[in-house]
Image 1 (cartoon, rainbow, N blue to C red):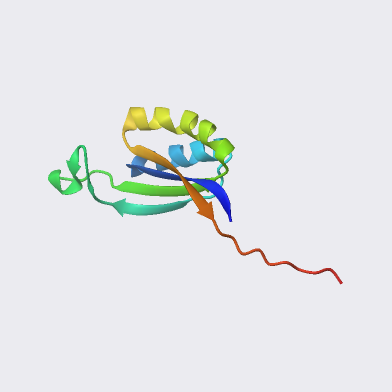
Image 2 (tube, one colour):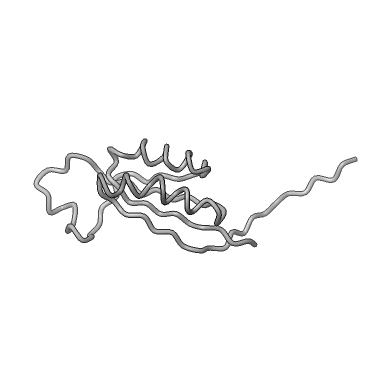
Length: 103
């Protein structure tokens, strides 16, 4: 087990490619995207809108602690401009590494 950072981003799906580009630029190359996210936040629920023009996405990624500063520098301007939120927390990664003995 070792300490990693978990990055969770909820944003407008229209900005997904820019956000993923920001993660890549920061050195965070792996992620998962969940589309059509609904919920209630500071702006109310997505059901409050008469028509939903664009859905929200939930992006989750994990990285080494030293990548957090570049992630924030690349993602924060996008979230400030287009809306959305980002949470970064400490988590433990448990990885099963298969060892292959050389013959």
